[in-house]
Image 1 (cartoon, rainbow, N blue to C red):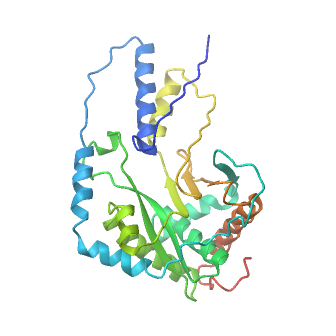
Image 2 (cartoon, rainbow, N blue to C red):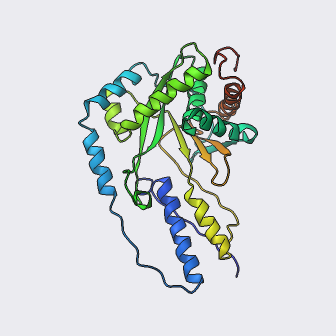
Image 3 (cartoon, one colour):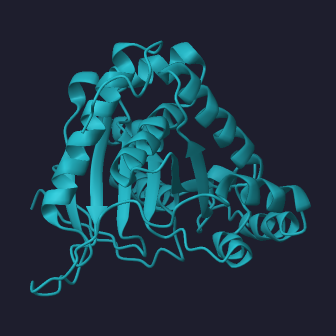
Length: 308
C-alpha cells in the first residue's frame, strides 16, 4: 500500500547513463505532480540527436583527429591485464563486479583536482594509467575513456539518446614525478576532448588495433540532486535500488561521484570468463595504493615506491 518497485530495462544503443537518469528523474517528477493533484505541463521534445550525428560525421573528415590518435596510440599495447590461461570453470553468463572502498581519501582526490584546476576524472585517470602500466610492465598504458558527445547547446542535457563514444587514450609513464604525470595526462585528455566524437570503430580500423580490453568510466549525475529534494518535499522516499549492465569490454573501471558529496565510488566490472577473481582483487588493491601514493607527495617520483 505504501511502496512500489520500478524496473527499467533497455539496450545501451538507445540510452546512455545520463539519459537513463534524466528519463527516470522526469518520470518521478510527473508522478509527484500527479500525486499533488496538479496537471502535467505540455512536454517539449528536443531533437538534439540529429545535431550530434551531424557533428560525428563532420569529425570524420578532420585530418588532425587521425594524426592525434596515430601519434598517441601507435605504441600502445593491446593487452595489459593477465587473463586466465585455461579454465575448467563453468562459463559465466554475466559480468561480475568488485566494489572497492576508498572513502577515506576519495574526497581528497576531488579536492586535489580543484586545487590543480583539473577535471576530477583526470586525477582518477592518471592513477588508472599508472595501475595498467604496473600490471603490464609496459611504460605505455592505454584505455578507452567514456566520452560525452552531447552538443554544447541549451536543452541538450534533457535530450535522450546514446551520446557516448569510447575514446582510446594513452599515456607514456616515463620517469618523473606525480605532478608531471598529472599534467601529461591532463594535456592528453584536453586534446582528446577536441576529437571526442571520432568513432572508436574508425580508430581501430585505421590502426588495425583493438582497444576493447579496458574501459574507464566517470559519472557525476547531479540531476539526481534536484529530483531527490523535490521528491522528499512531496513525501516520496527512495528505499533502495540495484542495477545490472553488460558491456563489450572485459574490464570496466567505474568511478562515480556521489551527488550530494565529494566522495567517489569505485567498482570494477569484469568478465569472469576472461579474468580470475584473484587478479581482480589484486587490481583493486593496486588502485588504492596508487591513489594513496599520489596524494602523499606530488613532487615524489611515481616510481619511487614499490607498489606491487
